[in-house]
Image (cartoon, rainbow, N blue to C red; front, side, top):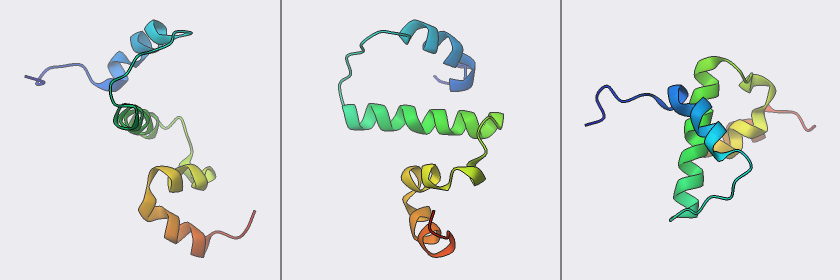
Length: 77
């Protein structure tokens, strides 16, 4: 059913345009916002638009397993 469907990256420009400046009703806030953040993360990672090595705290918030590593290996800011 999803075979041949556009990827999130392919629909992102239209989605962003459709949602710009609008309030959105969602059914399950935690799931929906988490899923959207994850898809945006994958998009930016694939596009190379964010240098995640320069944003380690972002990675830690999105990837809990990274938090312990960052706590040990990242000097205090």
